[in-house]
Amino acid sequence: MTRMQRSLILMFLVLGLALCSMAFTGKAMAAGSLSQGAQGSAVTKVQQVLNNRGYWCGSADGVFGASTRKAVVRFQQDNGISTTGTVGPLTNKALGISTTSVSRGGSMGGSRTMSMVATGYDNSYKSNYPFFGQPSFIGLPLARGIIATDPDVIPMGTRLYVEGYGEAIAADQGNAIQGNRIDLFFDSHGEAMNWGMRTVNVTLM
Image 1 (cartoon, rainbow, N blue to C red):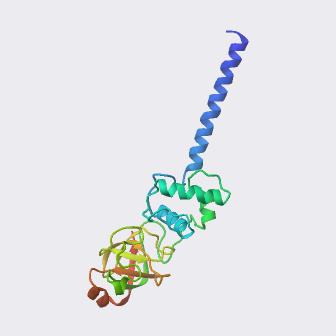
Image 2 (image 1 turned 135 degrees about the vertical axis):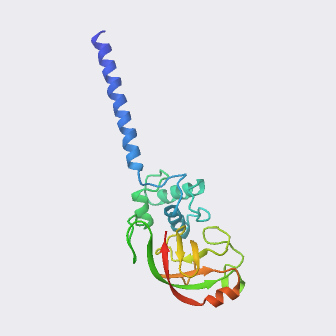
Image 3 (image 1 turned 90 degrees about the vertical axis):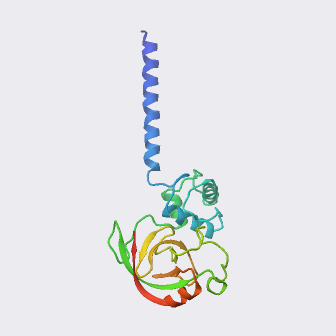
């Protein structure tokens, strides 16, 4: 083997190692980021913020699909962020989304319980104006177990247990539902009125 051949082999080995290193670094950088195919409450939060800022991505359903990716790319273009279509630290910061979990009246990790003021609503025109006839905020049909929350307190898609009501999912929002308040969906106007306004313990699952 000539010196030139040995040099070429060595050069290809070094190039191969460099490419492997770049691929590994790219995966490491992507850890903790949201990209197409991701699901969950973190995706729902991103979708809500994008929609509120005029980057429509469809219903905030917690599924990072093609529409969400297109909205992310448009947002990144308008804010001078590399148009990867992936929501990482820079995009989260520009969106105003904190990636740090904060405990509000319970322990970190696992389930936690907080005291909240709960009211009742139903799908009647009087109770659900101006959203009469529409599904919940994230697109689920209105039915018992759907509740409205302040997404800054309980993110959309969160599953929970409400004292005196049962298992539920945070899937709706309302102008009056701010802070430690929730609105519980009932199948009839009478049930919603009978519930009234109560202070209950809410356990996030």
